[in-house]
Image 1 (cartoon, rainbow, N blue to C red):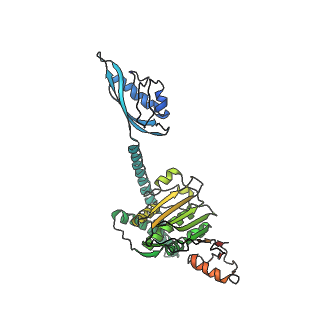
Image 2: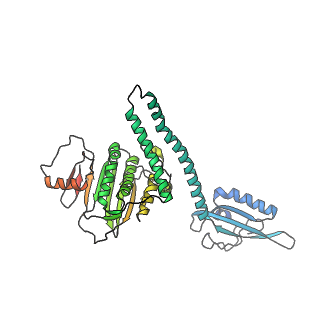
Image 3: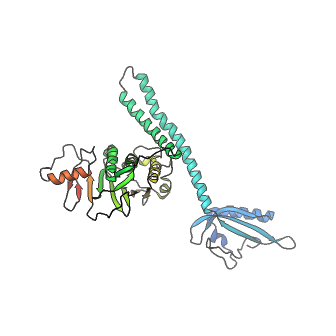
Length: 386
Protein backbone atom coordinates (compact mmCIF):
# COMPACT_ATOMS: atom_id res chain seq x y z
CA UNK A 1 0.00 0.00 0.00
CA UNK A 2 1.29 3.51 -0.80
CA UNK A 3 2.28 5.82 2.06
CA UNK A 4 -1.00 7.76 1.86
CA UNK A 5 -3.11 4.63 1.12
CA UNK A 6 -4.34 6.12 -2.15
CA UNK A 7 -2.93 3.23 -4.16
CA UNK A 8 -2.77 -0.48 -3.51
CA UNK A 9 0.62 -1.45 -4.91
CA UNK A 10 0.23 -5.23 -4.95
CA UNK A 11 -2.04 -7.88 -3.44
CA UNK A 12 -2.03 -11.68 -3.51
CA UNK A 13 -5.61 -12.55 -2.59
CA UNK A 14 -4.95 -16.30 -2.10
CA UNK A 15 -8.34 -17.05 -3.66
CA UNK A 16 -10.12 -15.17 -0.87
CA UNK A 17 -10.16 -11.77 -2.61
CA UNK A 18 -9.10 -10.73 -6.10
CA UNK A 19 -5.40 -10.20 -6.86
CA UNK A 20 -3.91 -6.79 -7.62
CA UNK A 21 -0.81 -7.05 -9.83
CA UNK A 22 -0.25 -3.33 -10.54
CA UNK A 23 -0.82 -0.12 -8.58
CA UNK A 24 -4.56 0.46 -8.27
CA UNK A 25 -6.14 3.72 -7.10
CA UNK A 26 -9.70 2.33 -7.02
CA UNK A 27 -8.96 -0.48 -4.58
CA UNK A 28 -11.56 0.69 -2.08
CA UNK A 29 -14.36 0.35 -4.63
CA UNK A 30 -13.04 -3.08 -5.62
CA UNK A 31 -12.71 -4.54 -2.13
CA UNK A 32 -14.68 -2.57 0.48
CA UNK A 33 -18.46 -2.62 0.92
CA UNK A 34 -19.98 0.91 0.60
CA UNK A 35 -21.41 0.76 4.12
CA UNK A 36 -17.92 0.15 5.56
CA UNK A 37 -16.02 2.82 3.60
CA UNK A 38 -16.32 5.45 6.32
CA UNK A 39 -14.99 3.11 9.05
CA UNK A 40 -12.07 2.00 6.87
CA UNK A 41 -11.14 5.60 6.03
CA UNK A 42 -11.31 6.63 9.69
CA UNK A 43 -8.91 3.82 10.68
CA UNK A 44 -6.56 4.73 7.78
CA UNK A 45 -6.43 8.36 8.93
CA UNK A 46 -5.68 7.28 12.50
CA UNK A 47 -2.92 4.86 11.45
CA UNK A 48 -1.23 7.49 9.22
CA UNK A 49 -1.49 10.18 11.87
CA UNK A 50 -0.03 8.03 14.63
CA UNK A 51 2.29 5.98 12.41
CA UNK A 52 0.93 2.87 14.05
CA UNK A 53 -0.61 -0.40 12.91
CA UNK A 54 -3.84 -0.38 10.92
CA UNK A 55 -6.26 -2.99 12.33
CA UNK A 56 -9.95 -3.33 11.52
CA UNK A 57 -12.61 -6.00 11.00
CA UNK A 58 -14.84 -5.11 8.07
CA UNK A 59 -16.80 -6.61 5.22
CA UNK A 60 -14.92 -7.36 2.03
CA UNK A 61 -15.93 -8.24 -1.52
CA UNK A 62 -14.59 -11.70 -2.28
CA UNK A 63 -13.15 -12.90 -5.58
CA UNK A 64 -16.53 -14.50 -6.42
CA UNK A 65 -18.28 -11.13 -5.72
CA UNK A 66 -19.96 -12.37 -2.54
CA UNK A 67 -19.47 -10.55 0.76
CA UNK A 68 -17.65 -11.89 3.81
CA UNK A 69 -15.69 -10.61 6.78
CA UNK A 70 -11.96 -9.95 7.01
CA UNK A 71 -9.52 -8.81 9.66
CA UNK A 72 -7.19 -6.32 7.93
CA UNK A 73 -3.85 -5.48 9.50
CA UNK A 74 -1.05 -3.29 8.08
CA UNK A 75 2.17 -1.89 9.53
CA UNK A 76 4.07 1.16 8.23
CA UNK A 77 7.43 0.69 6.52
CA UNK A 78 9.65 3.70 7.38
CA UNK A 79 12.60 5.18 5.53
CA UNK A 80 15.83 6.30 7.19
CA UNK A 81 14.31 9.67 8.07
CA UNK A 82 11.41 7.99 9.85
CA UNK A 83 8.84 8.84 7.21
CA UNK A 84 6.28 6.31 6.02
CA UNK A 85 7.43 4.82 2.72
CA UNK A 86 4.67 2.23 2.28
CA UNK A 87 2.44 -0.15 4.22
CA UNK A 88 2.68 -3.92 4.42
CA UNK A 89 -0.30 -5.91 5.61
CA UNK A 90 -2.53 -8.97 5.55
CA UNK A 91 -6.26 -9.71 5.21
CA UNK A 92 -7.47 -12.73 7.20
CA UNK A 93 -10.78 -14.48 6.51
CA UNK A 94 -12.78 -14.31 9.76
CA UNK A 95 -16.16 -15.13 8.19
CA UNK A 96 -16.64 -18.36 10.17
CA UNK A 97 -15.96 -16.62 13.48
CA UNK A 98 -18.30 -13.74 12.63
CA UNK A 99 -21.02 -16.21 11.66
CA UNK A 100 -20.55 -18.08 14.96
CA UNK A 101 -20.74 -14.80 16.87
CA UNK A 102 -23.91 -13.91 15.00
CA UNK A 103 -25.47 -17.26 15.89
CA UNK A 104 -24.56 -16.79 19.55
CA UNK A 105 -26.06 -13.30 19.58
CA UNK A 106 -29.16 -14.62 17.85
CA UNK A 107 -29.47 -17.45 20.38
CA UNK A 108 -29.05 -15.00 23.23
CA UNK A 109 -31.71 -12.76 21.73
CA UNK A 110 -34.09 -15.70 21.28
CA UNK A 111 -33.44 -16.75 24.89
CA UNK A 112 -34.41 -13.29 26.12
CA UNK A 113 -37.51 -13.32 23.94
CA UNK A 114 -38.39 -16.78 25.20
CA UNK A 115 -38.10 -15.80 28.84
CA UNK A 116 -40.30 -12.78 28.29
CA UNK A 117 -42.80 -14.83 26.31
CA UNK A 118 -42.74 -17.66 28.84
CA UNK A 119 -43.63 -15.31 31.68
CA UNK A 120 -46.47 -13.93 29.58
CA UNK A 121 -47.72 -17.36 28.52
CA UNK A 122 -47.60 -18.80 32.03
CA UNK A 123 -49.41 -15.76 33.38
CA UNK A 124 -52.19 -15.93 30.78
CA UNK A 125 -53.66 -19.31 31.81
CA UNK A 126 -53.09 -18.68 35.51
CA UNK A 127 -55.06 -15.43 35.58
CA UNK A 128 -58.42 -16.95 34.53
CA UNK A 129 -57.76 -19.95 36.80
CA UNK A 130 -57.38 -17.62 39.77
CA UNK A 131 -60.42 -15.59 38.76
CA UNK A 132 -62.41 -18.76 38.16
CA UNK A 133 -61.62 -20.07 41.60
CA UNK A 134 -62.87 -16.81 43.08
CA UNK A 135 -66.24 -17.05 41.34
CA UNK A 136 -66.57 -20.84 41.50
CA UNK A 137 -68.92 -20.44 44.46
CA UNK A 138 -71.61 -18.84 42.30
CA UNK A 139 -70.92 -20.02 38.70
CA UNK A 140 -69.84 -23.21 36.97
CA UNK A 141 -66.49 -22.50 35.31
CA UNK A 142 -65.05 -25.98 35.40
CA UNK A 143 -64.71 -26.16 31.60
CA UNK A 144 -62.74 -22.93 31.41
CA UNK A 145 -60.47 -24.01 34.26
CA UNK A 146 -59.87 -27.37 32.59
CA UNK A 147 -58.85 -25.77 29.28
CA UNK A 148 -56.48 -23.27 30.87
CA UNK A 149 -54.86 -25.84 33.16
CA UNK A 150 -54.37 -28.21 30.21
CA UNK A 151 -52.74 -25.39 28.27
CA UNK A 152 -50.40 -24.69 31.15
CA UNK A 153 -49.56 -28.38 31.48
CA UNK A 154 -48.64 -28.59 27.78
CA UNK A 155 -46.27 -25.63 28.12
CA UNK A 156 -44.58 -27.14 31.16
CA UNK A 157 -44.38 -30.55 29.45
CA UNK A 158 -42.51 -29.00 26.52
CA UNK A 159 -40.00 -27.43 28.88
CA UNK A 160 -39.57 -30.71 30.75
CA UNK A 161 -38.90 -32.54 27.48
CA UNK A 162 -36.17 -30.02 26.65
CA UNK A 163 -34.61 -30.53 30.07
CA UNK A 164 -34.68 -34.35 29.75
CA UNK A 165 -33.06 -34.36 26.32
CA UNK A 166 -30.45 -31.73 27.22
CA UNK A 167 -29.47 -33.65 30.36
CA UNK A 168 -29.45 -37.02 28.59
CA UNK A 169 -32.09 -38.52 30.90
CA UNK A 170 -34.70 -39.17 28.21
CA UNK A 171 -34.85 -42.89 27.46
CA UNK A 172 -36.34 -44.33 24.28
CA UNK A 173 -38.57 -47.40 24.59
CA UNK A 174 -37.48 -49.08 21.37
CA UNK A 175 -39.31 -51.91 19.70
CA UNK A 176 -39.89 -53.27 16.20
CA UNK A 177 -42.66 -51.02 14.82
CA UNK A 178 -44.53 -50.63 11.55
CA UNK A 179 -43.96 -46.95 10.76
CA UNK A 180 -47.36 -46.66 9.04
CA UNK A 181 -49.10 -47.49 12.33
CA UNK A 182 -47.08 -44.79 14.06
CA UNK A 183 -48.05 -42.24 11.42
CA UNK A 184 -51.72 -43.16 11.78
CA UNK A 185 -51.46 -42.63 15.53
CA UNK A 186 -49.94 -39.20 14.87
CA UNK A 187 -52.80 -38.29 12.53
CA UNK A 188 -55.25 -39.20 15.30
CA UNK A 189 -53.47 -36.68 17.54
CA UNK A 190 -53.56 -33.97 14.85
CA UNK A 191 -57.14 -34.46 13.67
CA UNK A 192 -58.57 -31.56 15.67
CA UNK A 193 -55.98 -29.10 14.32
CA UNK A 194 -56.67 -30.20 10.72
CA UNK A 195 -60.43 -29.94 11.15
CA UNK A 196 -60.16 -26.60 12.93
CA UNK A 197 -58.19 -25.20 10.00
CA UNK A 198 -60.63 -26.60 7.45
CA UNK A 199 -57.78 -28.25 5.54
CA UNK A 200 -57.62 -31.12 3.09
CA UNK A 201 -55.30 -33.94 4.14
CA UNK A 202 -53.78 -36.33 1.62
CA UNK A 203 -51.76 -39.30 2.86
CA UNK A 204 -49.71 -41.78 0.81
CA UNK A 205 -48.67 -45.06 2.41
CA UNK A 206 -46.40 -47.61 0.69
CA UNK A 207 -47.88 -51.01 0.00
CA UNK A 208 -45.00 -52.71 1.80
CA UNK A 209 -44.46 -52.42 5.54
CA UNK A 210 -41.57 -50.24 6.65
CA UNK A 211 -40.16 -51.60 9.91
CA UNK A 212 -38.22 -49.32 12.24
CA UNK A 213 -36.47 -49.98 15.54
CA UNK A 214 -37.84 -47.06 17.51
CA UNK A 215 -40.07 -45.57 20.18
CA UNK A 216 -43.52 -45.38 18.57
CA UNK A 217 -44.78 -42.79 21.07
CA UNK A 218 -41.87 -40.41 20.46
CA UNK A 219 -42.02 -40.84 16.68
CA UNK A 220 -45.78 -40.20 16.73
CA UNK A 221 -44.97 -37.04 18.70
CA UNK A 222 -42.61 -35.93 15.90
CA UNK A 223 -45.11 -36.58 13.09
CA UNK A 224 -47.95 -34.98 15.03
CA UNK A 225 -45.85 -31.88 15.63
CA UNK A 226 -45.10 -31.52 11.92
CA UNK A 227 -48.76 -32.03 11.00
CA UNK A 228 -49.96 -29.57 13.63
CA UNK A 229 -47.48 -26.97 12.37
CA UNK A 230 -48.70 -27.48 8.81
CA UNK A 231 -52.28 -26.94 9.96
CA UNK A 232 -51.28 -23.90 12.03
CA UNK A 233 -49.34 -22.07 9.33
CA UNK A 234 -51.62 -22.93 6.38
CA UNK A 235 -54.40 -20.52 5.52
CA UNK A 236 -57.93 -21.93 5.17
CA UNK A 237 -58.68 -23.85 3.06
CA UNK A 238 -55.27 -25.45 2.75
CA UNK A 239 -53.76 -28.68 1.47
CA UNK A 240 -51.50 -30.87 3.61
CA UNK A 241 -49.82 -33.85 1.94
CA UNK A 242 -48.02 -36.61 3.83
CA UNK A 243 -46.09 -39.35 2.06
CA UNK A 244 -44.12 -42.34 3.31
CA UNK A 245 -41.76 -44.40 1.20
CA UNK A 246 -38.57 -46.44 1.18
CA UNK A 247 -35.42 -44.82 -0.17
CA UNK A 248 -32.56 -47.29 -0.03
CA UNK A 249 -32.17 -48.51 3.55
CA UNK A 250 -34.17 -45.64 5.07
CA UNK A 251 -37.80 -44.78 5.55
CA UNK A 252 -38.64 -41.26 4.36
CA UNK A 253 -41.71 -39.30 5.50
CA UNK A 254 -42.50 -35.94 3.90
CA UNK A 255 -45.04 -33.42 5.22
CA UNK A 256 -45.82 -30.87 2.51
CA UNK A 257 -48.20 -27.92 2.71
CA UNK A 258 -49.17 -24.77 0.83
CA UNK A 259 -48.62 -22.64 3.92
CA UNK A 260 -47.18 -19.16 4.43
CA UNK A 261 -43.74 -20.56 3.58
CA UNK A 262 -40.42 -20.09 5.37
CA UNK A 263 -37.78 -17.52 4.51
CA UNK A 264 -34.17 -18.61 4.10
CA UNK A 265 -33.22 -16.81 7.34
CA UNK A 266 -35.94 -18.60 9.30
CA UNK A 267 -34.95 -21.97 7.84
CA UNK A 268 -31.50 -21.56 9.38
CA UNK A 269 -32.84 -21.19 12.91
CA UNK A 270 -35.99 -23.30 12.69
CA UNK A 271 -34.55 -26.29 14.55
CA UNK A 272 -32.78 -24.18 17.19
CA UNK A 273 -34.34 -24.27 20.63
CA UNK A 274 -36.75 -21.33 21.08
CA UNK A 275 -36.40 -20.35 17.42
CA UNK A 276 -39.84 -19.34 16.11
CA UNK A 277 -41.49 -18.02 12.96
CA UNK A 278 -43.49 -14.83 12.89
CA UNK A 279 -46.44 -15.70 15.15
CA UNK A 280 -48.74 -13.32 13.23
CA UNK A 281 -48.80 -15.85 10.39
CA UNK A 282 -50.16 -18.68 12.55
CA UNK A 283 -53.31 -19.61 14.36
CA UNK A 284 -51.89 -19.35 17.84
CA UNK A 285 -48.22 -19.73 18.68
CA UNK A 286 -45.81 -21.92 20.61
CA UNK A 287 -42.61 -21.72 22.56
CA UNK A 288 -40.29 -22.56 19.69
CA UNK A 289 -39.60 -25.97 21.25
CA UNK A 290 -41.42 -28.49 19.04
CA UNK A 291 -39.08 -28.66 16.04
CA UNK A 292 -35.96 -28.61 18.21
CA UNK A 293 -37.41 -31.54 20.15
CA UNK A 294 -38.29 -33.32 16.91
CA UNK A 295 -34.73 -33.01 15.63
CA UNK A 296 -33.23 -34.32 18.88
CA UNK A 297 -35.66 -37.25 19.04
CA UNK A 298 -34.93 -38.21 15.44
CA UNK A 299 -31.18 -37.96 16.02
CA UNK A 300 -31.59 -40.35 18.97
CA UNK A 301 -33.20 -42.77 16.48
CA UNK A 302 -30.33 -42.34 14.00
CA UNK A 303 -32.60 -40.25 11.77
CA UNK A 304 -32.74 -36.69 10.53
CA UNK A 305 -35.11 -33.86 9.64
CA UNK A 306 -34.78 -31.13 7.03
CA UNK A 307 -36.97 -28.35 5.64
CA UNK A 308 -37.33 -27.02 2.13
CA UNK A 309 -39.22 -23.87 1.16
CA UNK A 310 -38.90 -21.39 -1.68
CA UNK A 311 -39.69 -18.55 0.71
CA UNK A 312 -42.65 -16.54 1.95
CA UNK A 313 -45.97 -17.70 0.49
CA UNK A 314 -44.42 -20.73 -1.25
CA UNK A 315 -45.38 -23.46 1.22
CA UNK A 316 -42.92 -25.86 2.83
CA UNK A 317 -41.84 -29.49 2.91
CA UNK A 318 -40.39 -31.21 6.00
CA UNK A 319 -38.51 -34.44 5.31
CA UNK A 320 -37.90 -37.05 8.02
CA UNK A 321 -35.59 -40.01 7.47
CA UNK A 322 -35.22 -43.06 9.71
CA UNK A 323 -33.03 -46.17 9.32
CA UNK A 324 -35.01 -49.30 8.48
CA UNK A 325 -34.46 -52.17 10.87
CA UNK A 326 -35.31 -54.88 8.33
CA UNK A 327 -33.76 -53.96 4.94
CA UNK A 328 -35.37 -56.11 2.29
CA UNK A 329 -35.80 -55.72 -1.44
CA UNK A 330 -38.30 -52.93 -2.06
CA UNK A 331 -41.78 -53.74 -3.29
CA UNK A 332 -42.03 -52.23 -6.78
CA UNK A 333 -45.83 -52.34 -6.82
CA UNK A 334 -47.72 -49.08 -6.90
CA UNK A 335 -48.06 -47.02 -3.77
CA UNK A 336 -51.47 -46.67 -2.18
CA UNK A 337 -52.37 -42.97 -2.21
CA UNK A 338 -54.92 -42.27 0.48
CA UNK A 339 -56.42 -38.80 0.58
CA UNK A 340 -58.51 -37.44 3.41
CA UNK A 341 -60.97 -34.57 3.16
CA UNK A 342 -63.48 -33.15 5.58
CA UNK A 343 -67.04 -34.01 4.60
CA UNK A 344 -70.37 -32.89 6.08
CA UNK A 345 -71.92 -35.32 8.52
CA UNK A 346 -74.74 -36.09 6.09
CA UNK A 347 -72.43 -37.19 3.26
CA UNK A 348 -74.06 -40.11 1.47
CA UNK A 349 -72.56 -43.59 1.78
CA UNK A 350 -71.60 -45.40 -1.45
CA UNK A 351 -70.62 -48.68 0.17
CA UNK A 352 -73.34 -50.53 -1.70
CA UNK A 353 -71.58 -49.76 -5.00
CA UNK A 354 -68.01 -50.72 -4.02
CA UNK A 355 -68.17 -52.51 -0.67
CA UNK A 356 -64.97 -54.56 -1.03
CA UNK A 357 -62.71 -51.73 -2.18
CA UNK A 358 -64.19 -49.25 0.28
CA UNK A 359 -63.58 -51.42 3.31
CA UNK A 360 -59.99 -52.19 2.29
CA UNK A 361 -59.12 -48.53 1.80
CA UNK A 362 -60.74 -47.43 5.05
CA UNK A 363 -58.76 -50.05 6.95
CA UNK A 364 -55.47 -48.99 5.36
CA UNK A 365 -55.65 -45.27 5.73
CA UNK A 366 -58.28 -43.63 7.86
CA UNK A 367 -57.14 -42.27 11.22
CA UNK A 368 -59.33 -43.62 14.01
CA UNK A 369 -60.99 -40.27 14.76
CA UNK A 370 -61.82 -39.27 11.17
CA UNK A 371 -65.47 -40.34 11.10
CA UNK A 372 -66.28 -37.63 8.56
CA UNK A 373 -63.70 -38.82 5.99
CA UNK A 374 -64.65 -40.91 3.00
CA UNK A 375 -62.03 -42.76 0.98
CA UNK A 376 -62.64 -44.48 -2.35
CA UNK A 377 -60.12 -46.80 -4.00
CA UNK A 378 -59.62 -46.91 -7.77
CA UNK A 379 -57.94 -49.51 -9.93
CA UNK A 380 -54.16 -49.55 -9.89
CA UNK A 381 -53.92 -49.13 -6.15
CA UNK A 382 -54.74 -45.40 -6.11
CA UNK A 383 -57.21 -44.01 -3.60
CA UNK A 384 -59.10 -40.76 -4.14
CA UNK A 385 -60.85 -38.65 -1.53
CA UNK A 386 -63.77 -36.45 -2.55
